[in-house]
Image (cartoon, rainbow, N blue to C red; front, side, top):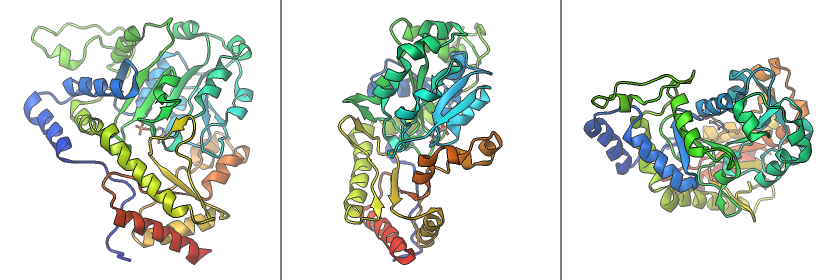
Length: 408
Ligand SMILES: Cc1ncc(COP(=O)(O)O)c(C=O)c1O
């Protein structure tokens, strides 16, 4: 086994088309921040998600705060999230002054719909299900719960948008799940808002970035909300700098206290080149890697394979979250040390929030989320990215297998 030839855990997809698109921005357009490339990326996202209004922002986190503020969520309010997610899900809620209420997850790592209802009270304003690893949550179950007579009666409106919606908002943390499918359609159709991340490790990246799909019910004018949210993403300004920079275009108004979270064109250019080949190539290649891993590990009873496709859902193949039967946290950590020492980058998704200092100080306890702990303590995430060769895939599989055999 070649120790010097390391296999990184993650690599962004950069080909000539990405370089050309970035070069075009730098050399030809005369504009670096939000402008024509962002509009083009939004248009590509509309096609992929089948949602007519999509706003690009500078991260998932800023997009989530934008929507929570738009809905008037703040101190005294509660937002339900799963206990198994990256901390950004909870931190976006803390940052607008509300309380994240955690719900344990099922064995597929998504929020447990059976445990959701008991966490809803008159302070609950939103639920943020997380499509972990790219696998959509049980959106039908979530929609049924928030639309139940009991929960509609419990809902107390405090803002104009809350009165108009008149129920708990569903804003999906789709940081992992661009291109995922729910009941034959893009999963983005199942929530009021779906928020993606284009951070450097994601299936499509803009370095840092995100996008918000607006899919509010019919009593909202989604085109109007798009314009309003766009203004709010630009400090509440009625024009982007690109529009103001046009000759004679200087006049503007500030209509609200917004955030400054717009995506620059130079970032959008990277994602634009990638999204153009996403469904036809990049996503298919990711699926092949998942299939390769499943094919290798299916013969070993110590390997618990992740679910990435079933009768109603198909993943975006973001993270391959392998679990090892019968091991504890220490043994898992030893396995990771062995795998890393042999030049293969693996990861753990995620250290549960209740085990991290911030959340412990806020009195969240891991003992309240037993399934989250059970899944975390034997989880190892394997590399998935475009251009990972079959030789490397075989080496990754064999290294994981020898780690198990050597240590157990
Ligand atoms: C599940 C989840 N939610 C939210 C985020 C935050 O995304 P961003 O870094 O774009 O703010 C991430 C990023 O890794 C994530 O994995």
